[in-house]
Amino acid sequence: MTSNQRCLIQNYAHLLLSKHDTNGTEIWFHEYSAEQLGVAGIDNGPFVFPRGGVVELSNGDILVFGSVGNPLDCYAFKFDSLGNHIDHVSWGHPT
Image 1 (spheres, rainbow, N blue to C red):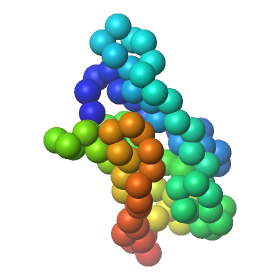
Image 2 (image 1 turned 180 degrees about the vertical axis):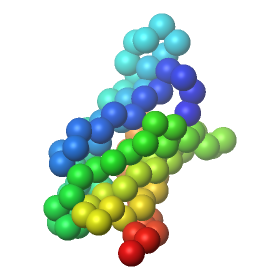
Image 3 (image 1 turned 90 degrees about the horizontal axis):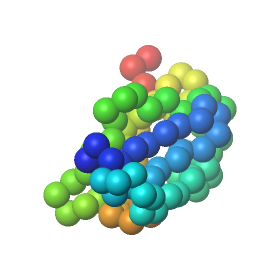
Image 4 (image 1 turned 45 degrees about the vertical axis):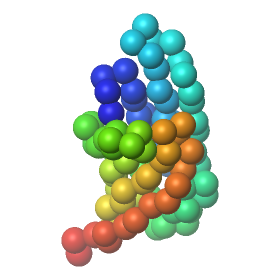
């Protein structure tokens, strides 16, 4: 992910994913609910996405790492180069 691409989170709500050019002009923007990401109803906990948890792959696809639920389960969410959700995988939690 380049410095002009950002991922923002609103706890208990939605993932906001946007891409901007070097001038700060928005190229695209997506807002995803837990239902749209396939993680709805997971212990009714928050979304937690650490800084640096967004990676752009060499093919332009985007990975967003974070945690969902209570207790928090670790996830990787995959998006295509236009920010469309592709899939996710979970590693569970350490308890």
